[in-house]
Image (cartoon, rainbow over all chains, first blue to last red; front, side, top):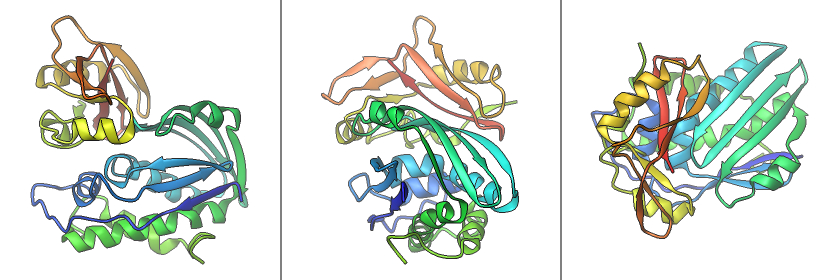
Length: 174
Length: 97
């Protein structure tokens, strides 16, 4: 498959900050800088994302994508990924069975932007695309719970809902 | 009404009290911007010109005090900012060279 996610086993801090009230800040506070990356394989090109400093920033967009493709049989969504180390625009278009992603990459860790822009389009099975994210959501839920963040944190209920609605894990974790 | 994400006034990524700024620049081999309080006010005004989900670069005015930490360990003044209107009443962004 031309889209895969290796979620890794990122270490978290077991640190709780009672000033935190939203999922992005809770993720940032939970993870260490120097721990395993999430590796997104896009058209066979690996893209590294830090749980602490990328996933924390893009989690709301990830959940929006997963919710949108689950609840709307046909749709379109433009995502302007906001992390300075995962900076890209994705135009997602889906029907009842597949999702097509047209991308424009600005900055990623490792300077593979040109390579990604040369291979900027992909189409995958819509359900399989969602399966790839399930392990990432699983990692985040474990970290947040391990640090003591509960459903009172804004976004955690949505995170758990989307996790539960994805039927199974991606190909690396079946 | 649009405001910066709350973490920019504290120790979060790009925040005014962010401590891992230099380590992150080195770890990612990418420049890492850090907001000043004054430039967050400028960014707030700039964000009002963006529609929900839209983003853009804006040149900082003279006298701005945001910084950019480079992978080689040096720090330079920021020349512009990138911001995105999240569409939820907040904006995400960072200073850049």
